[in-house]
Image 1 (cartoon, rainbow, N blue to C red):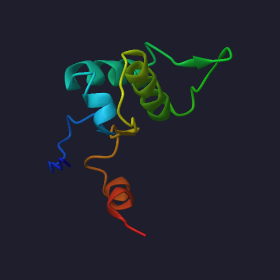
Image 2: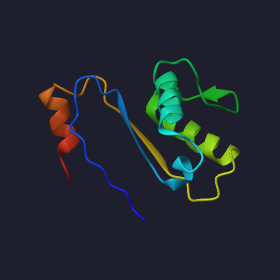
Image 3: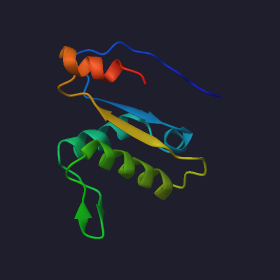
Length: 102
Protein backbone atom coordinates (compact mmCIF):
# COMPACT_ATOMS: atom_id res chain seq x y z
CA UNK A 1 0.00 0.00 0.00
CA UNK A 2 1.31 3.43 -0.87
CA UNK A 3 1.68 6.09 1.77
CA UNK A 4 1.90 9.73 0.78
CA UNK A 5 2.24 12.63 3.19
CA UNK A 6 2.49 16.34 2.52
CA UNK A 7 4.07 18.93 4.78
CA UNK A 8 4.80 22.63 4.56
CA UNK A 9 8.51 23.36 4.73
CA UNK A 10 9.79 25.57 7.52
CA UNK A 11 13.18 27.21 7.96
CA UNK A 12 14.30 24.54 10.47
CA UNK A 13 13.89 21.70 7.94
CA UNK A 14 17.29 20.31 6.95
CA UNK A 15 16.46 17.58 4.43
CA UNK A 16 13.81 15.22 3.08
CA UNK A 17 14.22 11.45 2.82
CA UNK A 18 12.14 9.82 0.09
CA UNK A 19 12.39 6.05 0.40
CA UNK A 20 10.60 2.81 -0.34
CA UNK A 21 9.60 0.11 2.14
CA UNK A 22 12.98 -1.54 1.71
CA UNK A 23 14.41 1.15 3.99
CA UNK A 24 11.49 1.75 6.36
CA UNK A 25 10.96 -1.99 7.02
CA UNK A 26 14.39 -2.21 8.69
CA UNK A 27 15.12 1.32 9.93
CA UNK A 28 13.22 3.88 11.97
CA UNK A 29 12.85 7.42 10.70
CA UNK A 30 14.84 8.61 13.73
CA UNK A 31 17.85 6.47 12.84
CA UNK A 32 17.61 7.40 9.15
CA UNK A 33 17.61 11.09 10.10
CA UNK A 34 20.65 10.61 12.32
CA UNK A 35 22.55 8.94 9.47
CA UNK A 36 21.62 11.66 6.96
CA UNK A 37 22.43 14.49 9.37
CA UNK A 38 25.87 13.01 10.06
CA UNK A 39 26.53 12.57 6.31
CA UNK A 40 25.49 16.12 5.49
CA UNK A 41 27.66 17.47 8.31
CA UNK A 42 30.66 15.43 7.09
CA UNK A 43 30.79 13.29 10.25
CA UNK A 44 30.40 9.99 8.38
CA UNK A 45 31.19 9.17 4.77
CA UNK A 46 30.50 6.29 2.46
CA UNK A 47 33.77 5.16 0.90
CA UNK A 48 33.97 2.97 -2.20
CA UNK A 49 37.39 1.79 -3.39
CA UNK A 50 38.99 4.30 -1.06
CA UNK A 51 37.15 7.26 -2.61
CA UNK A 52 34.35 9.25 -0.96
CA UNK A 53 31.79 11.46 -2.71
CA UNK A 54 32.50 14.80 -1.02
CA UNK A 55 30.77 16.84 -3.73
CA UNK A 56 27.26 15.50 -3.19
CA UNK A 57 26.71 14.52 0.41
CA UNK A 58 22.95 14.06 -0.08
CA UNK A 59 23.59 11.37 -2.71
CA UNK A 60 26.21 9.87 -0.43
CA UNK A 61 23.68 9.75 2.43
CA UNK A 62 21.08 8.07 0.19
CA UNK A 63 23.58 5.41 -0.90
CA UNK A 64 24.61 4.77 2.68
CA UNK A 65 20.99 4.38 3.83
CA UNK A 66 20.35 1.86 1.03
CA UNK A 67 23.49 -0.10 1.94
CA UNK A 68 22.52 -0.16 5.62
CA UNK A 69 19.04 -1.44 4.69
CA UNK A 70 20.56 -4.27 2.67
CA UNK A 71 23.02 -5.07 5.47
CA UNK A 72 20.10 -5.24 7.92
CA UNK A 73 18.47 -7.87 5.71
CA UNK A 74 15.86 -5.86 3.83
CA UNK A 75 14.00 -8.19 1.46
CA UNK A 76 11.97 -5.45 -0.26
CA UNK A 77 12.96 -3.13 -3.10
CA UNK A 78 15.10 -0.35 -1.66
CA UNK A 79 15.14 3.10 -3.24
CA UNK A 80 16.37 6.17 -1.38
CA UNK A 81 16.62 9.84 -2.32
CA UNK A 82 17.87 12.52 0.07
CA UNK A 83 17.11 16.16 -0.74
CA UNK A 84 19.13 18.70 1.20
CA UNK A 85 17.05 21.77 2.09
CA UNK A 86 19.56 23.94 3.90
CA UNK A 87 19.72 27.29 2.18
CA UNK A 88 16.53 26.72 0.17
CA UNK A 89 13.65 27.63 2.50
CA UNK A 90 13.05 31.36 2.49
CA UNK A 91 15.13 31.93 -0.64
CA UNK A 92 12.70 32.61 -3.52
CA UNK A 93 15.18 31.64 -6.24
CA UNK A 94 15.86 28.24 -4.74
CA UNK A 95 12.23 27.59 -3.81
CA UNK A 96 11.19 28.42 -7.35
CA UNK A 97 13.65 25.84 -8.71
CA UNK A 98 12.36 23.19 -6.30
CA UNK A 99 8.73 23.72 -7.30
CA UNK A 100 9.28 23.89 -11.08
CA UNK A 101 8.09 20.82 -13.00
CA UNK A 102 9.11 19.82 -16.48
